[in-house]
Image (cartoon, rainbow, N blue to C red):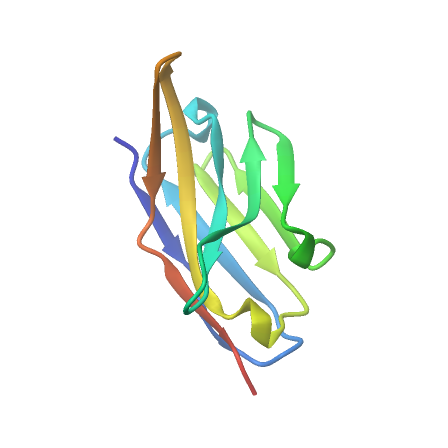
Length: 120
């Protein structure tokens, strides 16, 4: 079992910045993937940014150049630095982790989410 706790959401004006944190209860070295998703009202949950198999990063086209995913291995924490925020970035942001227990046993874990609202 992997528990994920997000923090750092809030209200910010357009053009502003926020940094989200996701603390994992397990070593992030043990995870096959870890990253951030978001879900806006009336829309499906979508990938924002993620680490895959350690150091490979993946970003949604809509956030490239504005958002940066990073991690602190000692703290088992993944961050999402969000700059130049736009109203369209308003959503609940979720942390997701994928752990490979065996070739046939892949488990997905989600945090409870943190609200990000971009508004003037």
